[in-house]
Amino acid sequence: MSVSYLDNAATTPVRREVLEAMTPYLTSHFGNPSSHHTIGEQAAGALADARIRVAAILGMRPTDVIFTSGATEANNLALKGVAIAAQQRRGARHVVTTPIEHESVLGSVDYLTRIHGFDATLVPVDTTGLVDPHAVAAAIRDDTAIVSVGYANNEIGTVQDVAGLVAAVAGRVPLHLDAVQAAGWLPLAGLGADALSIAGHKIGAPKGIGALGIRSRIPLEPVLHGGGQERDRRSGTENVAGAVGLARALELAEAERTDAAVRVAAMRDDLIAGVLQRVPIARLTGHPTHRLPGTASFTFSGVNGETVLLELDRHGIITSSGSACAAGSEEASHVLLALGIDHDEARTAVRVTLGHSTTGSVAPIVDAIEAAVAAVGSGV
Image (cartoon, rainbow, N blue to C red):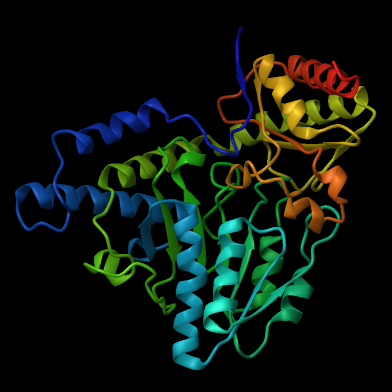
């Protein structure tokens, strides 16, 4: 049985070119970049080169790039680091975000409210997942520390009006974009944001490496303390091989981005049209046009979404119900609930995410979804 992997929003396979770039730093070039000898300096040079290359894709300076263990740490560092620094320096005690953000953002906001006494404003989104930049502007207070919004949503694929958000913030407070899902599909440079989070495993690098790009002028309190690596902003021995792999993966994704986005978006549109035509109970979630090229997300009213996924898996179609970080939860998706979808329907969600390497006709995928929903609905 052939297997079609259609859960690229959760993770992507590591690219051969990335593995080849990393291999020397997992074998012969194994030095600690903080060590002041030849082997350590060799590692430090590779780390510095990776930082330059990542910064170029993000449209930032190398000194703006902090390597992390992934997007969760990058988001935690952005939210907690900027907010606590602003609290210490100017008495800030307020943060702004939306209710459809990744758990690492919402969890960081919850931490700031519980432990550090912050207030939080979650600006509502509309039924397609878009936040109104004017509402974001209205939410900013004199004591606001940071505004954090996902560039593109990980569950429904809705892409936000970043230019509108930048104008709304207008330099009053730092704007952080969770760009994890956007990387490889949408431009990262020249956005006007003050901070961007990315994760390697979404673009063909291994799990366990990510980065926060944040303007050096923005005060940032470290979340991890110790040896003072990453210019005292993130202590811990750096993952040199991971940083090299992240840089290579970003370069490959950026080189392919425009062509891949056009090609995959056409496949996505065919998939959406096919499912909506052939499965009467299907409902598209997210914005109909302002969405990631590879993301098609549906609810199937009256049908258990997890059972549909199992049925698809049985036939070699690998998909998901939404965020892998919330897998196993019995609760309905907080993203879908924020769109106004009720609990029962939110539990019927199925998300299909195509990748750069996805090719061929989507007809077999549509066939499989139609058959799976029919089988589950009939109790087969």
